[in-house]
Image (cartoon, rainbow, N blue to C red; front, top):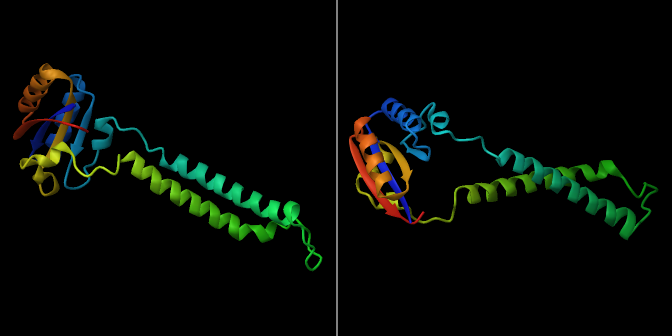
Length: 175
């Protein structure tokens, strides 16, 4: 079971200031839920860069290499046919399929990578059971603090109230 303490702020600036103060006071597992992207929130939350571009590069190179090897093997090794006097290994003829396979492999890897990174398929989250949390998609700026134990809940609730949260809620549930 995981525990979170949520605080709603009326403006994005107040939420970012509160996130900075919480990180400075030792709360490191933070998350923000906003109705639109907020500038600087990634840096304040300490989010690292995405590894999806590297995954796409590796999948694309692997897809291209695999396609090229399959074409070379079938044309030059497994079933060599001398058609019109062209060489058995004709690299330029392999370029379109090699490129298309690279794009297909990279796109598939990105699609699956995003699904895994987002933890899908997750139908629901404990936050969604809170009636007040509905404002996160309309006009509320929510800051979630993951805590351990009841003393962590009390400390996070006090810190959020002190930082000016309009609503403070504690949530417990499966992640």
